[in-house]
Length: 165
Image 1 (tube, helix red, strand yellow):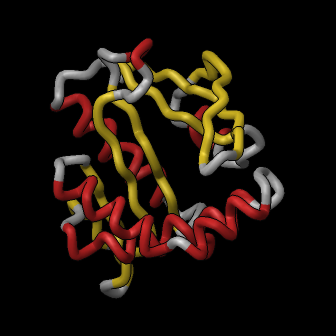
Image 2 (cartoon, rainbow, N blue to C red):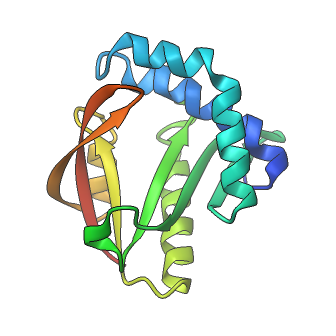
């Protein structure tokens, strides 16, 4: 496995991993129409990722045989209540590559980078019912609150986890 900082050339691969993992991870946890919207609007996700990379949002990818199979993005916490914290915005790994330590490695890369930005705390938002919640708790997170977010007109519930880093 090769872990590295993403470039704009990785934007489409990141978008594909993101959309595919929404299908495999979130089916049954959110409206099927929202998942279908993501699939049908892959190009929009690609452009969004490309813009984020160009404007300095940190993305790291993991490759197997020169193919992106997972990614992590992070930066300053978006929630104003945690404005002095870092945040892992997304951490996705293709289904066939889970339980191999890849998520832990990406998580630790993000944590180390956020520490270099002088953050000593971090948050992660995890969709309610997501089996990955156990992973985030195992990595030292404590669920501190529930949130409701809106994606394309759909309301989704999330758990916010807090970390001292």
